[in-house]
Length: 532
Image (tube, rainbow, N blue to C red):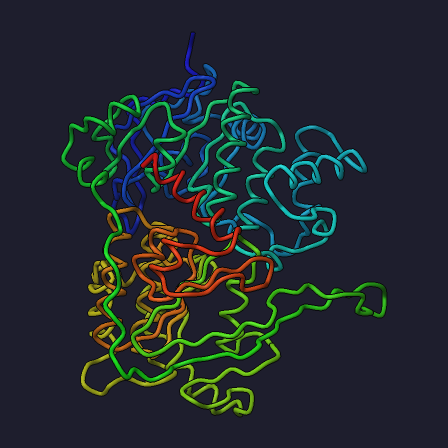
């Protein structure tokens, strides 16, 4: 039996300034029907480039060599008609960054309906019914009410689920999933993995799975290919690679774990930010006159406090209000209730006072591609805050950018590149550098490690801990990865559907959770990690 996808001696190089930069160097592997093959490796190792080259999605600057055959058809150099037939129908993609793949001007119904109409000719009520079914499958709550929503009205995890629904809409033979679970909480993650495994079995579908999460690889993959610097350094059955790794890099990857706990909060540390009965409700408007008929209760009566040198971890499923709460604290969205920053009620601040305080409160967003301007270089992005708030007068902005890039694990030589020229993990590091260069007092970290491979994740956690200790930073740390939350947080706050269901010291909450939802969350995370 011939393989569904055969990649043989694949090479990919990108043309830049008249030079060729080699991204993939002689990669070979196969994906059979009903088989899951995982591509693992650090950011920038060539995983996504390998996957995108399967249906020629790399753009005009890419020079591709070698052979990629899908179901016996050669895809390297294939004509547009064949590629159009195969893309989205036979081979579907779940991309790493949903905001770059979802059209901001189209509702969910329109985006999902497009694919069904194009490939299956399904329109009208039949399409609507299929869309609701798909959204239900991927865990979107009350999908009928979400059909007219736009991507920006969804949380990061919800957007990722919509992407998965779009990919599954046409029942593909081969599903290429590029970090499909990075933005998902552990309970939904388990459901999605179960869904993909079930579909693979019932549809006899091949699955090419790209991920940083080795726990997922062990639980879902039949074969593993470990990539480093554009090459496959080790490949084989999953159990063999995990139990008896041969290559040094594989051993490094498997031994990388986020461990330890944060340094204790200094005694007498001052309170940086606090809230009292914070409430964020979004109106639901209908009709020509946009009459308010109800509210989406995003956050209800949130009361919290964070001191200098302290990290408050915020956990909960996608759509529970974690990011909304953080944005309200930063005064980026409207809210009711008191928000105190360094003892001052920010509700009474003028625009000028708020602008001056922005230097002291920074945010690292979940989706780096959505928050980085495509028209600016890494240097311009990182130095943007310096242009607004000024420098320390000792170093030039360029030197400060170079220093912070080194701190977050980026090569300063790459500061002239644009965001699209970096991998997903590298873009995340640019976003962290941009926030840290101003040496703020409060930093909101919204899934800062979700796009990073394990080795870099450990580095980033250590970096964040080091910066916190050095400068007395207060962190609001939002994450689905409970292992990272435990390693970073002094206190943890658990949210469910806008309510804070439990809050307490990190170790107490992890060892003896009181609320049934917290217990379910921890149980899902531990079951998943047990496979790692």
